[in-house]
Every structure is written in structure tokens, then in C-alpha cells.
Image (cartoon, rainbow, N blue to C red; front, top):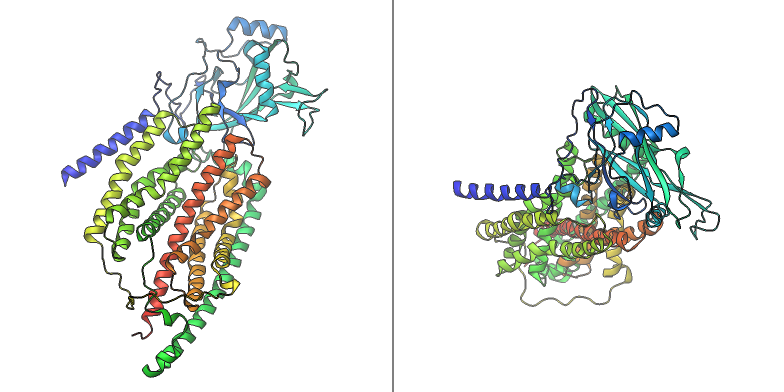
Length: 635
């Protein structure tokens, strides 16, 4: 026992080591990350960390901040004095740092930050605590035609930049255009302006930085329309410190959600969610009452018949009692899909609970995604255990084959999509491409955590799980013929559409806010509502799948196993269809890089929902089928 514990402790140590290795540059030492929440003294250095730039409408298409020709070092005191004299500005009283600051040195990062495309680097801004500055020269540089063209293309593509002050993000635009045609872009007479001056607003409480914002100065913009000749540009900055007595350091991230999300849509959001919940609950209650009345009538009819009349009156779902528990084709794949779906259900529920309790930061970059990857790996034994248990109950022999399918069913599509989008990102030089150490960490998680736990779950199911399926009726040797003449409204395609529509309506309102957070710049904070929507979604999927199962059995079709799984998973397919609507009608995304990431990863999310909800639909259908056939007398 102690040896086993020591083995697992060693494996976890390897994972922790590899995670920390993601903070070490393969080609050189990285700068230690700036610790957030420090208590500052007067004139302490405050570090501005630059991160990335990219088109505002394509949040995944991001590049290193210094992929554009920004200042990589601060101006000397002599250069500052000379520039200040030209604009009649007095620098007396300005607190200066003796050591010249350099930019472009990479910071150590968490694994989650690397996954979401962050590439944090030092900047040359010289800012000291509680020292407001009206103007300082960052650098004076001569932009070549190539540099000007790079800035112009970025401005025309609506590029934004992202910076951090102690984990507090700041955003701003590189420049602006004037008299530009919306369709044709730059035309004769249009102007392109660069914003070389930044103004930092830094709020403090109890000697800690609790708020940060950066703005540009329109009065200091530089015309860079003509890219045929070099232009001398003077980059500068100013700093304004102010008190934030009502904002505590632990609540510092609430300002981002407040300023971007809640005031404009919070009340409307709640009303929409309540309206959706009430509608779905009413439909579910209506469906439940109808099903209960129909089943009550069926039970009464079957129970009142004597044994001699039973055979003559036998019809509907009772007629197929000898075939309803005939196991499906491709049993190993079916069991793997059910087990993987149940694993994803547990992962999603645990993830939401951790987000609600604050154990996973919902504001820290990459924490949610990194948490999902780690939870999936740590709960791998759930999927393999449930898959192999069901496989053995269906008289399956090769449990190893079932375990391998379970281990590969969800990760293999994820790896295929990742290889495609990562190749596209590398070809474009985007920071969205995973760094090598992040890939190595994910491989280590799969090899040293997910794989052993998957094998362990399969072995536990083989040795300790109950093998008896406990079917309430006996299965005949010859399968009964299934009626072929079926009305169009009872056909499989029509029922699959119905199966997806009602559950999808339970989450439709919430989808916009989730998509705006995943594929935009909003911060999602209402995880309580998301938890309610998720629970309601599972309940509605279970109810609608059971209802469609009853109609299928009533028309004497005993092939319900795969049908119940497909009916439950249809909401995942509708989710993917909705992603097309969002891309083309609700967002401004464009380009091969952004499209590859969006449609690739939405395919993975939709597939996960297909497996989760398909598994929930099958489990509820199995309980329902055993219940109704266990209540009647069968030969």
C-alpha cells in the first residue's frame, strides 16, 4: 500500500515539475512573474507587463506585443530632458529610476496562461508607486517604411493591445482611421493615426493596487498615412494615481465584470433566464402528466386481463417484451460512449462546483481551461469503470478492447483538432500556438495520470462490478420483425429533431453570454445561473428521451439503445449549428486562423455535449424501460 502511494506521489511530482517547466524558456531564463497583492511603499517600482496584440474581433488571433516595433528600452535622462525642453515641460520633481528598464524579456507563466495564448514580457515603462506623472518620454524612434506599414496594417485591422499591472488587465487600441471607406478600407483622402501616448490610471487601497486602466491621448496622435518615407515618432506616457477606498484587493476583479457585463444586461439576463426556465418547466410538467396518464392506462389494461386473454390483447410496447432487452450492435463502442459521457458529466458538474466555491479562479486567465483538463485526467477512472461494467453486463468478453475505445473516444478527436489549429497558429506566428513545454505537460498528464487511472478503472470494473444486467424479462432467441410502415411524424429523423429542440431551448438564452465570454472579451461570472441551466438541461434531456422512447416502443420498435443515446445527444448537434449562426451573425470574426480555432474547438465542445447528454438520455431510458417491463406479467 505504501509503495503504491509512493508511486502515485512520484508521478504527481513529475506533473508538478513539468508544469513548472512550462515557466522555463527552452532558450534562456525567464523573468520571475510579478507577485500580485504586494503591499507597496512610496516610490516602489511598479511593473507594467505587456502581453499581446491582435484584431479585436478575432480574440484567438493574437501575437507577441513586440511583434510590432514598440519601444524596447526607456529613453535616457538626457533624451527626456531634451524632449521636455522642446515642449516646455518641467521634469523637476519626477521620480526617476537609476537603472534603465528594458522591454521584451519574457515572464514565467502558469500553464493555463500559456494554453490561452498569453506571452507576457517586460516593458520599459518606469512607474513608481504613488508618483503621478504628467508626461515622460518612453523613447524617440525613427520608424522605417516597413515599421509604418506594420502599424498601418494593425490599425486597419482594429488591433488592440493588452497589458497587466499585478494581474490586472488593461486594454487599448493602437490607433484610428479617418474618412476610411467601410467596405474598401483605405481610399484617397483617408488618414491613419497612431496613438504614441498612453495614460495609466492606477487605483490603490491599503497600499495595494486594486484597479488599473489605460487610455490613449487623441491630441498626441501621429499621422502615419504616408508609408513611403521614415517618420520620427515620440512615444510617451503619463501616470495618475488615485484612491479606491471602497474596492478591496480580493474584489479587484469585480470591476471588470461590472464595467463590461452586468449593468447593461444583468436584469435582462435574469428575466430571460427565468422566462426560459418557466417555459421549459411547464413543458416538462405537461409531458410528465401525459406520460403518467398513458402509462397508468396501459398498466390498468394489462393487469385486468387474465392469462388466456393476454395473448390475444397483447399489443404495443408489451408485445416486444422478448426483444426489448436484446443488446445493441457495436456493444464496445456503445458502452465506451456511455461511460465517456458519464465521465464528462461528472467533470462538468465538479468544474461548476469548483467555480462556484471559488476553488478555481473564474477571472484568472486559463484557470478554467486548465482545470477542465486536469479534472478530465483525474476522473478518467470513472469513464473506464462505467464502460467496462456495462460492457460485461451486456455479455461482452474483450474488456480490454472496451477500455481502449473509452480511453481514445474523446481525447483522439481533441488531439486531431489541436494538431490542425496549432499548425495553423504556428504558420501565422500567433501566440495561440501551444509552447512546447505546455504540450509536454499535457502529454505527461495523459500518460502519467489519465492512462493509469483509465486502466485502473477497467480492472476494478472487471474484478468487482456487478455483472448481472437484471433484465425483468427474458430475451427470445429470434428477433421480432420491426414494422416498416411508420408515419412521418413517428420517423427517426423527425423524432431526433424533436429530441434536440426542447433541451436546446433550455439553454438557448444562456448560450449568447457563454459564447461572448469564450469567443469575445467579456468575463462570465454568473456560474450559479450556469449550474441551474446545466441541471435543467440534463433533466429535460432525460424527460424528452423517455417520452420518445415510449412512442418508439409503442410502435413495436425494440431498437432503442442507440436511439435513446442519439436522441439525448441531439442538443450537442444543435449547439454546433448555433455556433455557425453566432459566427456569421453575432460576431465579427474572420480569417483562417480564427475560423479554424472557432469551428475546431466548437466541434469538440459539441461532441462533448453529445456524449454527455446522450449518456444521460440512455441512463434515464434504461431506468424507464426496466420499470415498465418489471410492472407487467410476461411469459
